[in-house]
Length: 145
Length: 145
DNA sequence: AAAATATAATCAGTATACTGAATATCAGTA
DNA sequence: TACTGATATTCAGTATACTGATTATATTTT
Image (tube, rainbow over all chains, first blue to last red; front, side, top):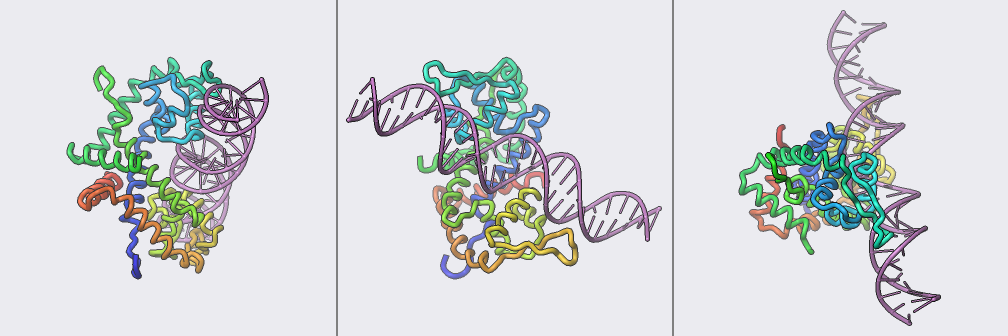
């Protein structure tokens, strides 16, 4: 930028990403309210349903979230009785996370809710636009890796 | 979803939006560290630089943020001496937000940092891809309005 | 084996972001 | 004018997300 101000916050990619995310997040949050789960808690369950018996660090890598953030989410999911933390006998520093009976019992219904929400969110785009959008978001996520 | 599980969290638009946002947010946060400002604090300043003398509610509408969230951001910016809250004499319920001398003095440098960051973030795309991406994010933001 | 290093999780502290309740003030009406 | 409802902000409480320090345990090096 030379002299005149050419920065426009409302056209900045970072701002648009933040606001689009927040819009989607809050809508999903509303859909999850009947189940007393938040979006990040659902995401943790979605990964554990696919593969449980992993550590908090490994869950954090899948969710792209910090160790302390995962700690809180796992603690609340355990309090809700959906998962259980056990000590790894092969490495007593680490927990192993398991989905409980109650956790498994919610899978079908919650995956349906998430599927419907994402279908609805993507419905404003053509199939070509949607795959282009997802591909561009992945390029941001994996930029510089 | 009929019988088999067809929901894939890693391909869900909401998940990709959240992770792309977080990646961009954390990179911008790092760039703002020398100035002891967070991304939302910068966004508030960016809007107030364009037009100050507005209320917290009005700033919240511009930022698409909740009244209580704005309250906290404004409080911290005031503590940093970048803005000042005055009572609106025409409506004593409302504050009027003003940028201070110190707040104005940071404008040029911080807008340069934000401009560079957003240029860099968008550089992985062609100009056509970038405008298509921004247009799609806006369609999510203003969906159902 | 002892020392140094690395790793998994937790704790303390801060910032964002929300909900719902409370407070103060304003505007329109009985 | 007193009442009713609306509005701007704040307060209390919860969840996410981070940094940096601490603790406990593993691994590697000397």
